[in-house]
Length: 219
Image 1 (cartoon, one colour):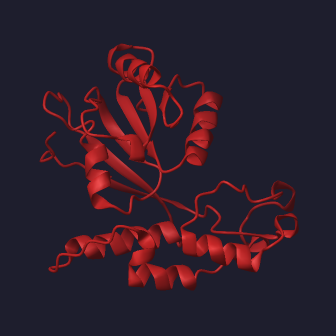
Image 2 (tube, rainbow, N blue to C red):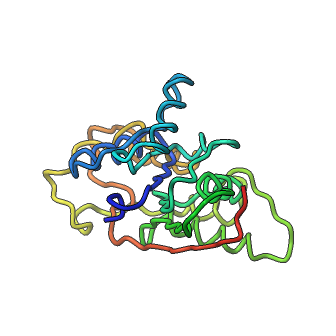
């Protein structure tokens, strides 16, 4: 929708997410660049950043949010998507600043995608609570927060028969999905044999879009 007229950044949390987005963009025949593989050479990364900024063909770049370091200029972009919520607010702000820099000529629109009724939504709500708190709270990792730790410990797995996903579509939960450590341990304890899996965690039920447009960000 936007890739014809505007440049867009899609931030992902893992290589697994980057691979899925790459596949989806290929199927949609949308030219795009990747900046999401930690084994990419410095020259490859620089080439993709330069190409994104200057090419009229490539209007989409998929970037690992952990690689959105200081100094990367993506001010050619005016649309930013986070494929899932970012726990560390500072990391999220730093990623947004890749587009919202001095010299930006357009408003920058930021959207975060959530799955309703999932750990993603709980994480986003909890992060807002921390951000809006009068007390200065800094929690580096999700497992260090008491409320999120309780939420993860009590997380339920949803039977696929009620999820709207066909039996034929369920084979095996990919081993490289990035669960938080507590959820990973619980997953392994409940389902020690991946070949016998008949349940899946948090099927995609509904997409929620949170829109933010803040002209106050500076590089």
